[in-house]
Image (spheres, rainbow, N blue to C red):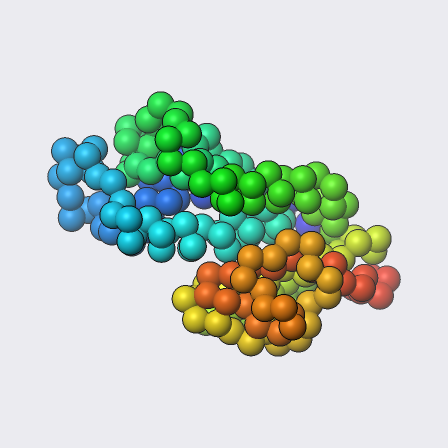
Length: 193
């Protein structure tokens, strides 16, 4: 409904831990404020967090509502809760592939009419994989995300990829923490809500 279209879809905010830090997997409750202030992800945890960020951002941009990107998430800034999530903007740790992913998803979001006025249809959901469609009768985009580190078989071919991170060339599997958005055929009139 119309209320869903107005939802903000943030992954980080000015008073919550930054998404990259959360996806790195440490527990801030086990740390003192001084430890939280000095905390930085280890290279191994940072690589894991960056991999986990891909499906999270794809969900942020393709679910009903609108993506609300907190400054610095696109350049992989870290930080636990307030005030450590409010550090000065820096591109010191910018990852060009992730930065381009944010830009590419932003362009897709602006150009896709189904994200502005389309319905939502859940196509598949299990412990590893989520697949859904956004369809406005003119355009249908199917999104698949893999929330695990293992390759998963998709329930069906999704269509022609317009965005893909980890979609196998045959279009049948999604690698660990992969995500894909594919153009598909529109649902019959009245479908996809």
